[in-house]
Each structure stands twice: as structure tokens, then as C-alpha cells.
Image (cartoon, rainbow, N blue to C red):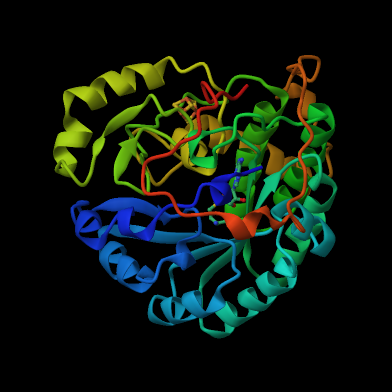
Length: 360
Ligand SMILES: C[S@@+](CC[C@H](N)C(=O)[O-])C[C@H]1O[C@@H](n2cnc3c(N)ncnc32)[C@H](O)[C@@H]1O
Ligand code: SF4
């Protein structure tokens, strides 16, 4: 689902601390993602730089390098750590090409809990190969008392991928319904709103329009390994500037940003990644609260679960419309593929030329 590993960056050319220091303070949320953040030798220093600049700092990680994460969690117990997991042992290791990966992730999670982490969780990306396991994975996360974040396979220049499509959109979408029901059937307010974000994933999976317009470029930006600032991690034509070469204000408030936002406002894609989904459901006037329509959906459907009334998803989703894809390529496992060993870090910017990165 992701070919970042096939396109490794050269450490000498990656974004440095001096560039990150140029980010202003006052962010609501910063996510150190990748590639794999724990491969950076200066990850602790990156956290030291970014932690004071944001209400919440997250590291998205494969969880295979616990030695890099443990000291960070000890120093910053409320840092958000999301370990990617795509299923139980066989499914996770096959999808992610990680020999022994599942066991390492569970061990890492236990060690981070023992280290005092207060905002730990798993992150799963829905696809045909794992949809039948997601409810059990969620229940397992609840048993461990850790969070469970979700997304669905996307195309995007960050992933060097433009052929991520479901084989059976209807089946995957229906699988998400079970998870939504389970999340509403808890006493966690966070889980109820996550249920709504998963409703958005059903729309995304079926190829429908987004539940709420995208606000990338305004409420959220993506900074790539070379300091290039994009409105999002999907369309590489939405470049706003470069943090090495320009001050933040010039990038965020400049003329280029204005024209990029005009393109975002009419973007035909139906992405629903955590970044563009969470920002889109926020209340315009009180950013810490969701939109009224979202609160209404949560209230109505939570009440239904309390009184044992079934949730008719067809009220919110038109299942008779399913986007059809032509020639969906088969996703293969790289678990035992020796290709991984021969990759050389590249010094130049090298987003693969896969045409226009598109999601529908
Ligand atoms: C790009 S990874 C980077 C962090 C880390 N290296 C990892 O493997 O999780 C961040 C998140 O994106 C998810 N992801 C990877 N490929 C994706 C794709 N094509 N569409 C949507 N999410 C994807 C990963 O599973 C992970 O949860
Ligand atoms: S809808 Fe997708 S591609 Fe379009 S601006 Fe938003 S995140 Fe980017």
C-alpha cells in the first residue's frame, strides 16, 4: 500500500533541526511521520524542538525500533504514539512486509505503557486484506487500554503510490459498519466521534464525495523530507513553498498559498485521511469542538445503541452507488522480497512519476 521504503531519502539532505525551529509556536497538532521517524538519529532533538510548539505532538511509527521511542515517552509521557498495525500476526506481517513485525509491535506497546506513556495507540489502514480483523483489533486495543486510529488505503505522492484501490469496495465498506457499531457501543466520547470519522471512511471507500469539504492548506499542511511545504500529501501540484528557503509566514500567508487554497476548494478528490478528516469536521468558531451536524449524528446514533435500535447506515450512505475501477492491480507482499536490501538512499527529490495522484 506504500512505496516510501522503495524511495529512501539520504540523511544528509533531509530536513534539519534549524529548519524545524523556523516553525512558529501555537500549533494545535504536529505529527512526525515518514518514512519512519525512528530511523532519524536526532528524533529526541526533533521532539525537543517541536514539543513546545504544539498542543499535541504525535509520532507515527512502525514500532519496530522501541529503543528510539522509549526514552522519548519517558521524557514526554503525553506524546501521542501511534504504532501502525494492519492486522494480527499473519496479516500484519504479510501486508507490511515485516518479518516478526507484529510481535515487535506488541512488545513495543507494552514497553511504552510501562514507560508511562499516556497517549498510546495503534493505527490501522483498511484494505480488503484486513477488513475482517479490524473489529477484533479494536477490541484488543481496548483490552490493552490504548487508542485505535483508522484510515483507508489512499493514493498520494507521499506514498509513491497511485494504484491503491479496493478489490471489493462494498465488502470493505460494510466491514467498517461493524467497527462503527462497536465504537458507539462504548462509554468513550472519543470513540463515538471516531465512529463518525469511520462513517467518512465508508464514503471514501465507496468512492462518494467527502462528508465535509477539504481544508488542507489552511488548517493543515504537509512538510516533506526536503522542507517543501504542500497543502496535502496527495497532490504534488499543491506546493506552497520551502521551509529551508523561506520564513513560515511568507509560505503560509503568501500569494502562492492563496492560489493553492483556491485549488483545494475545488479539489475533486475524496480523501479522508486523519489529517484532512479531523480538520474538516471541526467547528468553524470553536476549533476544539466538532461541527453541530457531527454532534447530532453522534448523539442520535449513541442513543440508538443504548436503546438497542439498529443503525440503518443506508440513511447516511447510498450503497447503490459504488465507484467502479478498471484494472485494479494485485497488491503483492514484500515479506520475503530481497529487493529491500539493495536500496540506496537518494540525494535528490524523487517523487516517482506516476502521473496525477488521484483518489475517488
Ligand atoms: C506513512 S506511515 C509513516 C509512519 C511509519 N513508517 C509507519 O509505517 O507507520 C503513517 C501511516 O500511514 C499509513 N499508510 C501507509 N500507506 C498508506 C496508504 N497508501 N494510504 C493510507 N495510509 C497509509 C501507515 O499504515 C501509517 O499508519
Ligand atoms: S481532497 Fe485530498 S487531494 Fe484534494 S486537497 Fe484535500 S487532501 Fe489534497
